[in-house]
Length: 558
Image (tube, rainbow, N blue to C red; front, side, top):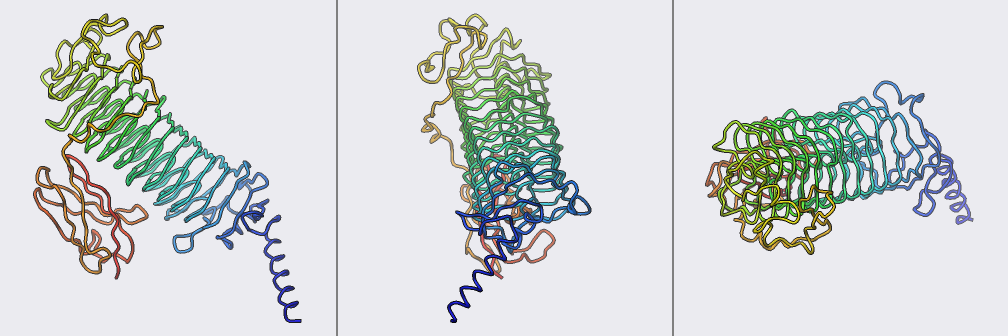
């Protein structure tokens, strides 16, 4: 008798839950069916269940079309942990007008799965750590989703995910007008140890102060971006602006393209990445963006340093600025560019070159590269056809066109005539180049007779061993209670360093100055206002003029 009563109760309760939706029981094999906006809102009560959308949804005439709009599903203290399959149907006119953290269709998600979701005509005004689909996400998968409309937010702002930690994002497409402050990206604004692949981004308009990227805003901690494409308009009032990423460290870009559009920014501007800090690798990438940056701008990368590499990549866009302006890279420090070329015109004042604006005095390798664009510079002493300022002992088998560039001098590289640089090439040109696997002869004029790259080659990175080590961080004890001892490894050869401390929502808590040669410092666990920080996980990032160290996580326990 008791067993029967229990069975009847469970059966009745299951029926009540199912009645909240159009069908299903919330399990992986039989997800709750979302037919109406009421069903969508009900997900907040079942955040660990599984859902499938079975019809188009429109917010236009719902209660969520007014006031502060939609209330996000999931919060940092109670995240969404289930799955949502949009079924390929559309969700139209999502509206949020709320300047707080973790806003989006979903606010905060962990170990969740999102697929086949189409958000059309979004109109969002949000705060930090916000995105149209998900505000902040950890260990989540997002696949085959689309977003278009307008987004206005603050820091760590993205279209798919505002702040992504340990996430996989694949086959997503966005067409957006995006406005934010710092760490603003087409797919994700703050990208930590995540994978973004096969995504496409278009900006009808965009604006940010720092860290604006067509795919990722600020990317670090072993992030990979592959087979992604950007087009559109980029405007960054401060610095760190890139067609694929604004700022990157410990990040790789493979088979990425910035196909068309323009960029206007103050500095650190590049068609793929604006500022590469440490251990960044660009492989088989191209950019055709037209770039204007006050300082340190390049067709592919602006400031590129810290044991990083560019391989088998090229730029065709024009670059304009004031100093450190190059057809491929604005400033190259402790890094390499191998098997690359630049064809765009370059214009600036000082440290201007058809391929490279400037390079550090050691730790650089440029090999098997060429440039052919016109070079215009005010200061002839610090500018040249191939490199503005540089060192010839770091540039090998690399050439510039003395006729098309308008320069017969360069601090590095070898000048050649047009006839010597196009097929069938002149004697002594392109010596040692691999025309069997990396380069191809342009026999039919697709590249105006100049050598062209065969994409798909995996480069040998052994030569990077010659680059000097860069600063690294150690912190102890971790977790810590009152005081954290931070040690800077290899500090002696660099200038003053700046240690930036962020919380997991991407907000900068404080910054500490490390004088040159100082081996360690202490953090008392307080923010920039001197207020004790709450218990939790914090991210430490090192910033020096020469390179930046790996970001590390520390835990504060009160």
